Image 1 (cartoon, one colour):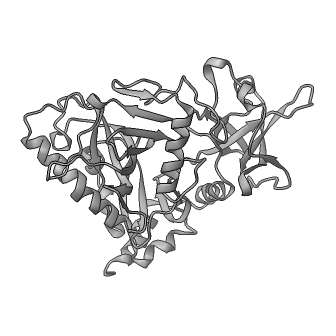
Image 2 (cartoon, one colour; image 1 turned 90 degrees about the vertical axis):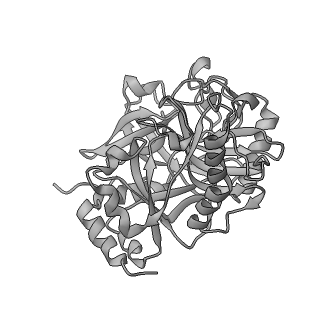
Image 3 (spheres, helix red, strand yellow; image 1 turned 120 degrees about the horizontal axis):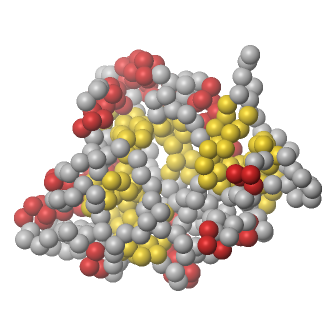
Length: 391
């Protein structure tokens, strides 16, 4: 039987602001809003836990000021987490990689944050729900130039991870339990706007200005870095055709962090917020999960189905399809959930407390296309082999 495409019911839309969504859960388990309107005091920094030396900012005016500032630095939105997002690599878009203008890096598993050091040296992190955390001064990560000046006015984009094993070259920690902020991109460094640079230039700038002085200082300083709330690491981008080096049996064992995927970045484009049709993510044998807002129909005495909403134009949310209403998801009205599509139905997988909003329509279409037209390892390497010899 031919698999039915899970296309949307595009005729229905709903306002992006959902007036009754704040009360969809008990007070101690509030869901994120579509647009940031309040601080959830139960928000934890990492994996549902607090981390020593890192505290949630609870002053709403200060939080909004930082959100707006980070949005301005990234030339992105002020009411959404202002970063770039890849699309899924599929058999329909993989030909773009043959241009020779792509680089690749492995993406470790971990929540995404923006790390911000302001002009006074205070250190903050913004998560995907736009909550802001402050790093205490005595637990801040040491970032000092070769000339001894503290590095300030900097915005780094990366993932917070736990290393699988100890590696002293990344900061000298004796315990592999310490978290690592793995820098995968950068927006600003030492007051210099990096958004017009390409990915190789951005990463190279951060290596020279932050990572090399930091590693030198850690190696030669007599001061302990044990009180740092986390340490720093940085990815390396290689030519796309070198992906085969990551796919041998030993690489994943040697890679310091649990690995999620590979990201293919256009080598000649700057940092652009939002869903980027020219940044690709590939996960071998991926089961694509799609994020929706769950909406239980109002005015129906005993509803049997709930609506699945996706992001539409002009900050609206539109009905995509429905999902059978179960006791498990009945309490999640208005919340963001992950679903997978199987046997012609959407199946609930988990609630997403780390998201404020569902996948946009284009992102969802990309995931559906990737699911229907998957890229095997053989197809990926055969395609990338055509890139050899490009400058």
